[in-house]
Image (cartoon, rainbow, N blue to C red; front, side, top):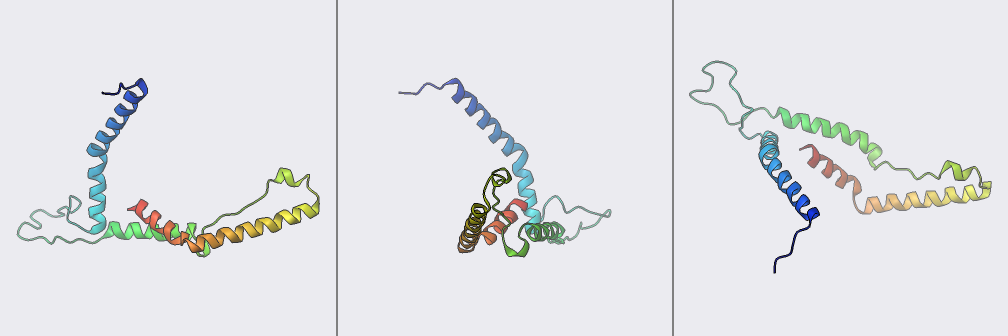
Length: 142
């Protein structure tokens, strides 16, 4: 027995179909060309510079300028995002609450924050969070 589609279901299906068509027609060719450039595979980026060039023979390799650019940007972003080899984060208490706290509670809160930061850094080290972040960043750039 078929299930009747609601107006919301019809709308979502139409949006998904439009997205799938746009992706196939517009994005996948560009993504494949970018991946080919990273892998230094012959594609449409290899153009003739002079008349008659490469008519008898032409190499399938070319200088991987795009790959060099991607890895340069990757190195710069890793240097910015992972300064000192760690993911940057900070736990800070609300400034508004601290104004009304006695000094001994503020000190206790600071000690708890230090313990939480140590625990988070330990968890990041156990899970290799810096390496995973680098891998995700590189996959975004490619």
